[in-house]
Length: 94
Length: 150
Image 1 (tube, one colour):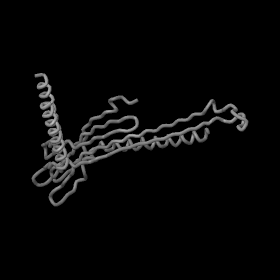
Image 2 (tube, chains in turn red, blue):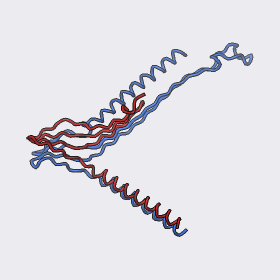
Image 3 (cartoon, chains in turn green, orange):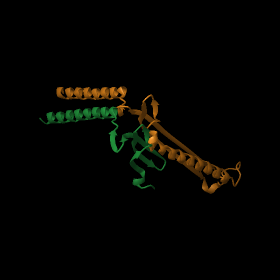
Image 4 (cartoon, helix red, strand yellow):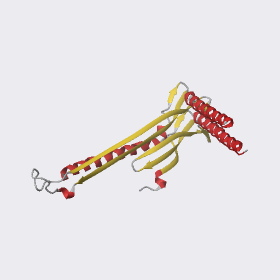
């Protein structure tokens, strides 16, 4: 029987460096790994790129616009549904 | 019976080992190499694609056997032999399933202007989410109207 610590893993991993001219780019990804005795699940997404130029290092995050839009719309529908339920309960009480 | 049983168990164990190997290969997807593509250089620009990857799988095996009354049955009629062996059997089975999906998230370009991260927008997914939200809002509104009238 695996411990929960071994079953769930959330990690940020740096990939191979890519050098173009004087710029070195290091891609980073975030992975959620869930293991169970007879299977598993992996969700891996790009997180950011580390840009090294000379002595300077800059971190540029990778924004998933599609996911943000989906979550925003989901949030909107949840807010609307909650408001609708609250209003209908209030009216019934009145 | 024993030989057959051993054969089935050996096959089941082999299948389970193969499935476990497959699951171990699945976890290779957790590496950044699965998310970032190979750099492609065109002119002064080097482009790296970044995608989201989801993989999931599961499998299961089962094995069982049994026999009636210790493997022997009493004589029931004259037609049947006195010490006929009882019915015994073994069986096993297994199954598995999995799914994987990938979606482009951004394109990283390294050029004379520096490093730029351009997001990849999926209008189909956003439109589907938008119309689902719109549908749920209309549904709630109509329910509220009905409740007010009733």
